[in-house]
Amino acid sequence: MITPLAAAIPAERRGIARDEDELARPQSRRSAAGRHDAEGLVIHILADGPRRAAEVRYS
Image (tube, rainbow, N blue to C red):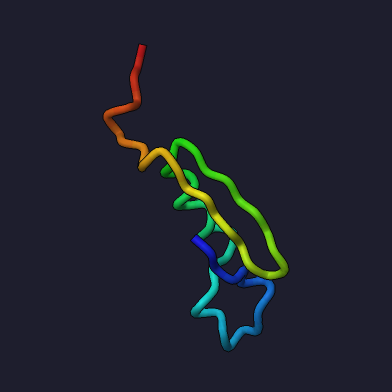
């Protein structure tokens, strides 16, 4: 996923960008993820498919 960072663009273009909270959501749902910042753009690498509630095990 490649997206502009909301803090790096003018307010009138906010609709095409993501803020830090919005960027954290897809990353928290994956078992492996990486983030790279590139001059106002954020590049997220999401891997290993989404986490599932069934994967949570209690002892």
